[in-house]
Amino acid sequence: MSPPNSPTPNIDEFFKRFEDIMVDAWRETGFGHLEIDTERASNDKIRVIIRGSTSYRYIISDDEVGRRGET
Image (cartoon, rainbow, N blue to C red):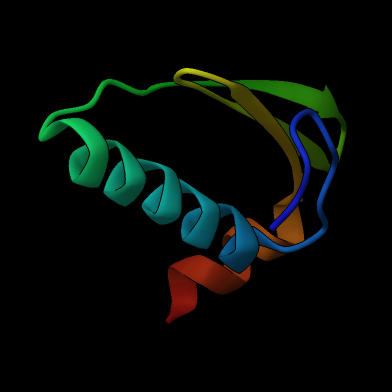
């Protein structure tokens, strides 16, 4: 798991972390609320911020997005 507010080069890690956060919320409370914001970090990077009880920030390259869309 990545620490809060740390960049990661792997889009699969982002999706896994999102799943972990949501499952933890459901397990602890039976419900959950997450907010996801995205913004352009640079010409080839996207900043993704997951907000819940804590925030996690990921940097994903355009290449990662393209590869994910092909699977």
